[in-house]
Image 1 (cartoon, rainbow, N blue to C red):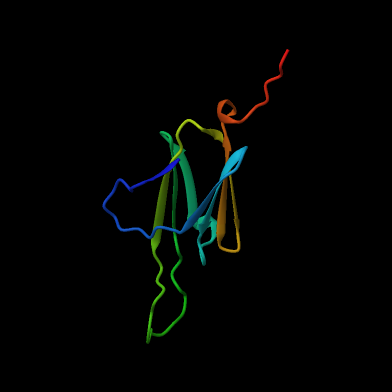
Image 2 (image 1 turned 90 degrees about the horizontal axis):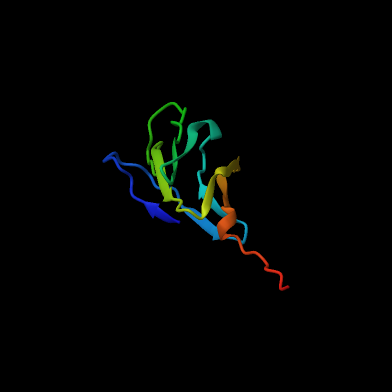
Length: 116
């Protein structure tokens, strides 16, 4: 599984992620502070998993004296390869952390062979 570049020239933020390779699955944790789960979409298509979303605008009134955080769109694309079963991908969002669980396809999972 590798990261892919966005296809369009639009500027996006790229969320920071940790990717864990476990025996039965691959887990991706993406930091999305201040993003509601309704503002995130996840699509699996043509062997790629794409996360797209937006950070909502700050509803505060007035003007900024200093602004280091701004509302922005984000996008991250991962190539799945044939090791991942695209029908068995799950997502959970909690406390600004999006966790994607990608179950490995049966043909790549370790198995024990009995000796006759």
